[in-house]
Length: 290
Image 1: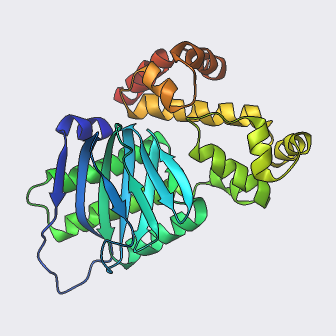
Image 2: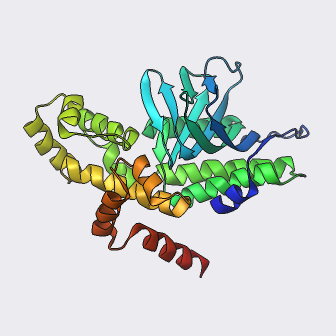
Image 3: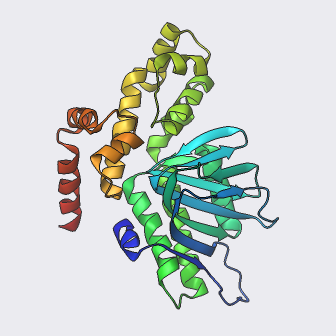
């Protein structure tokens, strides 16, 4: 579905649906697939009216920025942002940069409830499995493509998006991170938000408020991996998702996952997955199409 959305091309749609005598508690307001290039683009979460709603926005290419109540995030390919408004945040495009993404704006008490649970559990930015992204893209495509969409169909697509987020965030694999000690949880959150940049052990130890040696021991006990191994595993997981969910080049994926170049990425990926990145992409796509 993500490939079909990309093939459909850039489009923004505001839904003007007839009012129903029976309320639907998860409803789409608008949706789109856009690219921003070297322009002024900035949204303030306290300047968008008083009515509550949520934003789901998934980055495909380029990079955006988010300040969420004082915590800064780089929104890179493969990351999904979920925001509940009104709220003290701002997301924007840096001068000279580009950002390609698809998004949905939803309202209704069920959408708001689930969004708040997701944000409480993982924060506003998540890296989700490729099948979840595909489901989100499918919901977005339905909302922007179907000309005669009914309120029930729009609500169904909205529920599908929220259900995909639920499955991506509240899977059993998320449980160990929720039980991490506070210092280790801060480090893991920092790693997830900064996989594109340098993640030296000394900096991670500072975030945990520990000496380097003590941090390495405690992190290894808490996660089962040394810090450098954990970072590499998270980067390879993201590479895998980008290979499957996008048509980005290996060089572009290297830049989005903190590798110096495509060759360095390919060596690391081959060591972890047993094949070259493009061979992995082709084999997985053949398997899906079979």
